[in-house]
Amino acid sequence: MDMTGSRALVVGASSGIGAAVARTLAAAGAEVVAAGRRLDRLEQVAADAAHLRGSVGALVLDVADEASARAGVAEAAERLGGLDVVVNNAGVMLSSPVQTADPAEWERMTRTNLLGTLHVSHAALPHLLASRGTLVQTSSTSGRTASAGSGVYAATKHGVNAFSEALRQEVAAQGVRVVVVEPGMVDTELASHLTDPAMRTLAAQIAGEIRVLDPQDVADAVLFAVSRPAHVSVNEILLRPTAQVR
Image 1: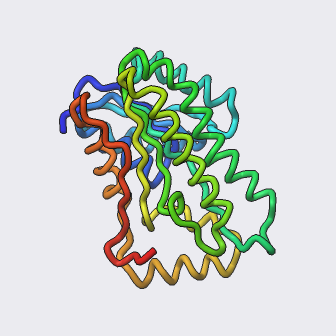
Image 2: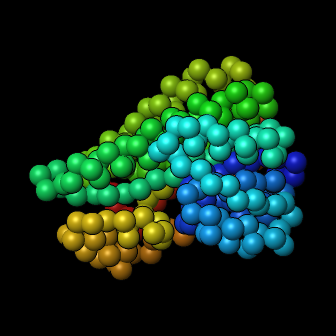
């Protein structure tokens, strides 16, 4: 899975899945810009990749701010001389029952998970059309099946899935591939964002009972999808821990 010469932007790359994807693409030979809000974390990802075949550079970008997202995509394309791969990975999970939820957390999830995906996709599309490139959207198993306590998070991920399928139909004939990756439970900092005590306890309990995915497992799936021959489009990858039931 050789990515030598490929130019990739990975958004939401300061930790977890995004950081693993940035390193994995660089290890396969790609020139990568790792973007997100936390510059110190991004610079560490870049430093960790210094010995790899490709390269990783850091870029501050906030997907929830349309102007920031647009400017960040433009800067990444300028640094790399274009974009062949864009990975939309920024996201937050602030699950809680509807009755006790803080609507401000709904706003944050919607702005980041859904609108952030739209902002980056829209800004990146001209570059991907020019290169006949690949857009990867990180969704979730919650994008397929909602569960009690996670209604709004699931709604944002269902939205990502719906938007991505519509976009795929719009650009497929122009050679652009759209890939949706739907991980189940992954060992990332997402659960640490939870403010609802019951949801925090439930997440910790589940993580203690089964072996969850490692971010590298998801990064390997992304690399598989983006490294297929140009005539092969892997539109959707659903991966769960073997022991995860829902």
